[in-house]
Image (tube, rainbow, N blue to C red; front, side, top):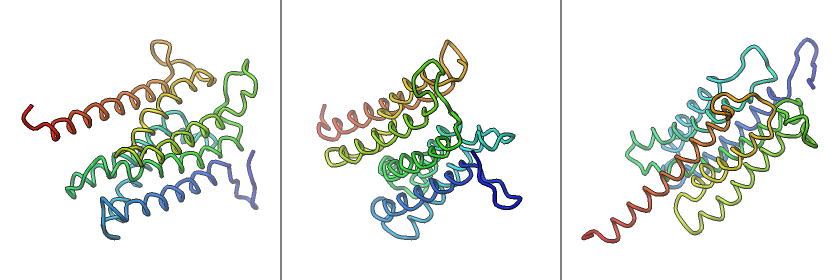
Length: 225
């Protein structure tokens, strides 16, 4: 499915990816404008760092020869990770709390990713296994996973710091790992797809950060132990 304006052909991804990026930029800037940035200048710098690495991550695994394959399993993951790594690097350089910075952009990553994935729905790409019912709407399952993690993260933030970050890393990572079984792509290693390896790495990183955060909190509360 594509739209033609004169000699210009617009694929759904070419429209939806910039729209998803716009959602990401607006949400991330609003969240960064408070802690940990605390100023518009710092928020803009943090956002720029996050956006540049997100774009770089997406382009690394994109199929440049196929305009309809811009949102692949790997390019979506590396784009998400690039956004988190970019703002984390800014936090390290600016001597700001890294976890707080990453948590600030995590909801923007999930919201922007869900909007961008709509391009796959309209294009009919990224389909599921043909033997499954409604295999052609696999991107909708991924959108549902992103939105579920987003809503859970917002609720978790009321109870613990870093709720959105942990929801994205762990909840979306787990959901995406199992969703990959329904995706019509070949396995890459040990019977798992590249997307599943990325999802497993993301989930493991989330659990590692969660354990490290609890250990740090325990050390602060019990300095003599």
